[in-house]
Image (cartoon, rainbow, N blue to C red; front, top):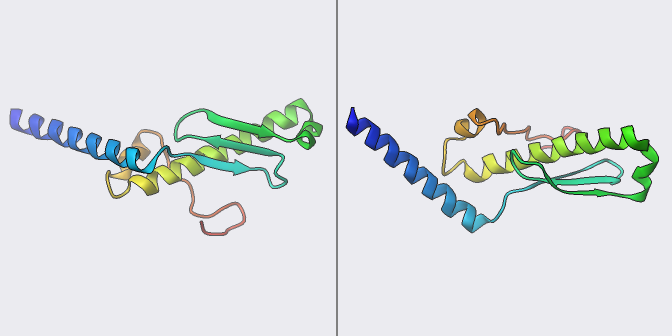
Length: 117
């Protein structure tokens, strides 16, 4: 039993090191999304809060509730994009089912218009 625990611990350390080295080489993973008219743009990280939110003057015409709803919609899309990029980036290093189990679901490979990314 101790050998099994040691092997599992070693595998965890090896995967952790491989992921760390990969992220160091590739840089931070982010996702970006914009509203169709470009009025709202969000940059997000996988599983994290938005890193940047850009709102044009035209977006202010949506009113507070409309703008808040649009920011939330675009932020969710940016985070899905970040999660997908994370999956794509790490699929050679780690079993991406583990990422999904951690709540980092891979998004669709198609955008809202049906185009493949």
